[in-house]
Amino acid sequence: MDSLELIRGLARPSSTRIVLLVIDGLGGLPHPKTGKTELETAKTPNLDKLAAAGICGMIDPISPGITPGSTPGHLALFGYDPVKFNIGRGVVEALGIDFDLKPGDIAARGNFCTVDKDGLITDRRAGRISTAKCAELCQLLSGLVIDKVKLSILPVREHRFVIIFQGKDLAPDVSDSDPQQTSVAPKAVTALNPKADLMAVVANKFVEQARAILAKHHPANMLLLRGFSQRPHLPTMPEIYRLKPAAIAAYPMYRGLAKLVGMQVLDTGATIAEEMATLKENYSAYDFFFLHIKKTDSAGEDGDFERKVKLIEEADKSLPALTDLKPEVIVVTGDHSTPATFKGHSWHPLPVVLHSRWCRPDRVGEFSESACISGGLGRFPATQIMPLAMAHALKLAKFGA
Image (tube, rainbow, N blue to C red):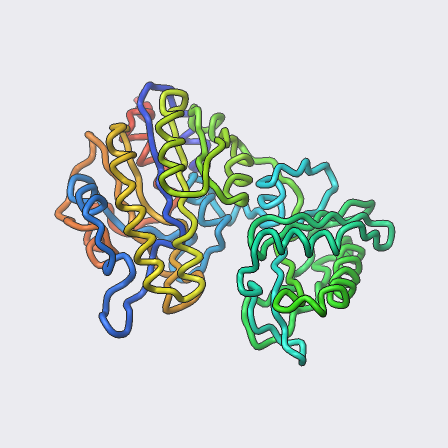
């Protein structure tokens, strides 16, 4: 019996509420001048108060040493084994913008990027062009049909877009063109098994046509593709946990992932204050809330230490809007570490605090990597957060006689 089946057998409905606050890319590394991470540098009196009253620890989204993408990082927080349920980024991006994926459709995540005269990538995000500019470029690329395969290119946010391939005999088992580093050329898309040969041919032909179309549109003069995938079937959170779950997330990818695991995705604004207002407005209607803060991750990817610090402080200032609602369980953590000094996702564990009337407080007095490493929860897999939250919300029956 796997862990989800175990929880499914023990879960029971109740009136208690759980709020999972995910500060994207929360974990950091020490700044070379101060020796403090972004979280340790930020002034976070409200998070510190929560940590002092709760129980803390450190989590590994996948396992020690493995750097997670955003999708597996979040799946682990929702209790799904991210290795068993390996979902391509393309699907969640497509669902996040409400594209109706049909059986057989292949979706891939795209980045507009910048390449130099030698075709080497200088910026994987094309300077984070505006969403309006992204939509304009997607329009230039739309309407292509390659080897009887119809292509739909749709804007997501800033430099990100999604591409949908619709045709016969397509399989998603192809490699990415995105090398996820600069100073190298985009990769050719290759079939990972013979059934995906057509998909690889069509993808490469599209990339070459796009190269010509985008050549004069610096800084977005090229594109990168990754996460080719079809819509999978997952057991949903209502089925597993007997919850009525809701998601409050401004960014499409996280809305798509929430939809895939059976959450009701609520309309919300883009700011943290607007997300907190959405929580308050809908608080009585659901018993589980996934509340997502995105921009901390973007600041880390951009190498902007100070901006990430300020965004953490903004999240902290908003926290009373959550705690004043007095949910029975509050969990605050991240989906992965994105140290500004590293300029990308990393394998480092990240802090977590669980607050509940029923928790056994430890001696941690602040919410930070250096403090939480000594917390009572210890270091554990992120997949264990949901069982802990369910138990502290009195939503799990006793196992065995």
